[in-house]
Length: 254
Image (cartoon, rainbow, N blue to C red; front, side):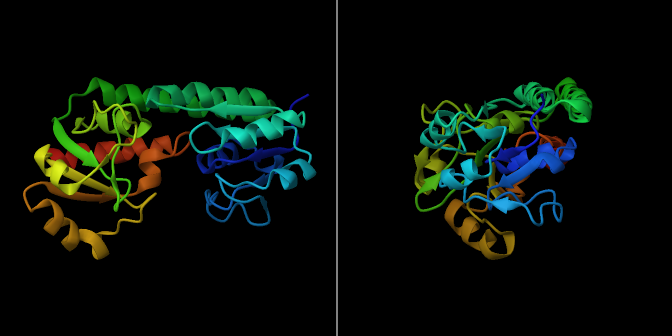
């Protein structure tokens, strides 16, 4: 029997479940689950992605809990499983991993959600293929996720794989850490063409930070401020990520 009561501990998964028609099955999500806007009012909140209230989750008697290996903690997953609740774990490192995850979620939910998930996955595959088929100008970039300490991403991340579709060549791509800690001085030595500043997890804002970033990194490289969830949320939000890559291609080609 398909699950009738599900909990999502990852914002991008929550959004995708709703988009494939599973809103009625959702009984709880994290406080960071904000999309689709206006659709999640009244949904029980069970803490954050790193500190969920496991006891409350179990009180809600879910049939299935959705988590992400990077967003959520192993001990919480183990505690939920120990109580006999099935847990689906996803961890897409590449954009091409997402369609299979979406199809799996739909198949787990069954019914109309399976058909909607398959349609969404097919659309993702088609748009991804279209971007891969057209060449893009190569641009050496650094994608900043934090400051003080300054942190960026290596190529072993979904973000970097997405940016590759825009022609991005990661200045920290070969670093062994998935999220290298660095300094502005080291970043300048790597001579990027562009610095990218998403508004999450650190809330970089063009109006607040543009002048500071120009002083920090110099006025030679381009400074690009963009929506972080479009670059790091997977699932339905991958469509917006692909559109952002198209826009970056045009911006970098100009």
